[in-house]
Length: 117
Image (tube, rainbow, N blue to C red):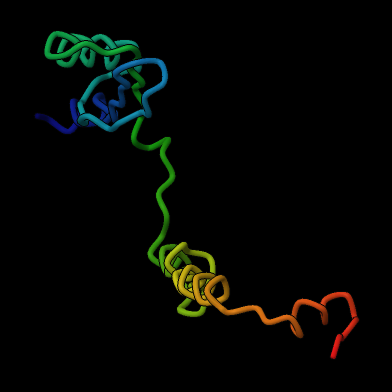
């Protein structure tokens, strides 16, 4: 490909969804001179292989990726276990212990503030 041809073609990313409620999935990249040709090429290459509900074609240069510096902000902090369900795993055991405790008369009457002797 000559230098003039390289400038003529642009890289497009193709996304599709199998039905109207499915999420978009990246399928492949292709070279095309414009959006219209890229869409036709995506349809020709993809739709004959499997049924799809929708195809999106996006110029790669229009997609903003995170920089390496920005990616470091995605790392999780170690002190956030309470935000995940595994952070609450001890509660089931604690609740079971609480339910299995023997309630005596003194404790029951203490709830009302009355103590019988």
